Amino acid sequence: MTSSIRLRLTLATIITLSIAMAVFGVLLIEIFTAHLERQARANLDNELTRLIALVEPDAPQPLLTQDMPDPRYAIPLSGLYWQVSDPETGQIAASRSLFDQALDIPAALQPGAPPIALKLEDAGGTILLATTRRLGFERADGSTRTLDLVVAERRDRLELAIAAFRFDLFRVLAILVVMLAVAGWIQVSVGLRPFSGLRQRLAGVREGRERRLVGRFPREVKPLVDEVNELLDAQGHAITYARARASDLAHGLQTPLTVLGVEARKLRQAGLDEPALRIEKLVETMAITVHHQLGLARLRHRARAEHCATPLAATIEKVIATLRLTPDGESLHWTRTLDTALTVDLDPADLTEMCGIVLENASQWAKSEIRIEALHKGDYIHLIVEDDGPGFAPDTAHRPRPNGGTGYGLGLRIVSEIAEINGASITRGASQSGGARVEIALRAAYPGTASPPPPR
Image (cartoon, rainbow, N blue to C red; front, side, top):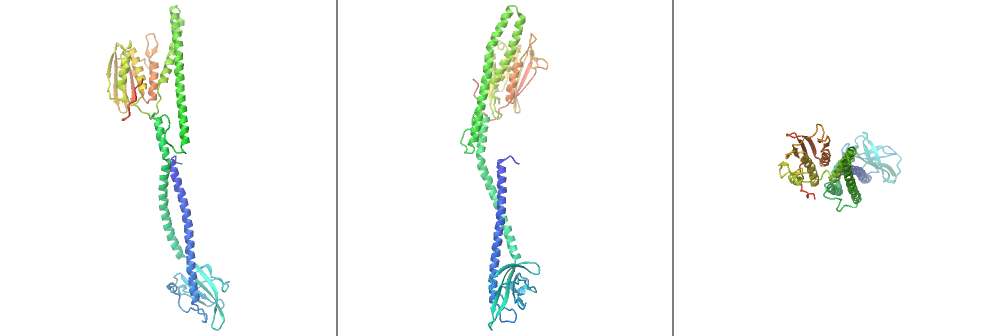
């Protein structure tokens, strides 16, 4: 069964119309057939009246005073017949159209009874519509002569008219079904038009232009709109609540972690290096988790169809300006190869977070220089960041620390989260100078997409 409501309703309309028109056609043919038969029998009654008026009762055998007016009576097997018979003597007078045949009429006819309509068969088995009557005719000597009179006509002439009518009728009904089907399609399309508006409103919600379904909807669609709005409100509250709780939890753990770090330094100053080292490692592990959750809580989850156009070069310049104020970044040489016209399909806050993490980590490990380049390849813009630091450890996403630990893994995890949410990808490798190389493939902004306001 098709999943299209419009097609299903249209098919149902066509099937219903076809059945209704077929039934109507059959009934109309039956009515037309009955009408033709009534008309034919009325004509036969008139012919029988003429036949009665032309009977010569004084003749030794049944005889008409003159020929019947209709010329078909004189044409052999023309289909229109008359016959006058004497039930006492068996003598028969018939039209030339009967040729050498005789009509077999019922013997139990009552004299003077009204005309009887019946169906007969000729010698060839053809059905005849007939009207017969038994009458007593007064002779000149005052006696009465009883005669059976019958007028008949072949029914197949009616069948030809019925067949022609049937053909014309069903041709007209077929055209009418097509016209009504088109009208039904238009009616269904007009009836389903509110759902097209609803789909556009939902697209607006999905793309971030609207938070709820707004507008005027038909009474039948309004309950669905209300349910969707309640669902959107509940989802928004749940997401806001979850982010707030994650952020509150992460911020609430920062103070205890800071206190633990201070206590670890006091233990180290007191000469208790082993307990201080264990506490410092636990504090570092907890800090990584807290910072990771804070980074995730700040991410802005966008819908699939929502698009942005954020300037890449301007965002990087702002991040570099901030990093140059730090001890690690003020002594570095920043080499940029950026086209100021490049825009990416990424929320400004997410792009700032991503660039900030990558460039901050590069500034912490670079010796003297950081190279930044942006290349437009097809539907993506590739942001490449290279430094002349120690580079990544083999087969890992971390850099080796002088004391044997590793770093840079947390930042890249957050960057990977941002990339996954926004349809981007990140690859790591070694730069030409042996340092770290991070390449991020960002979706280029769609033409005509407006730039969102910068993050505060």
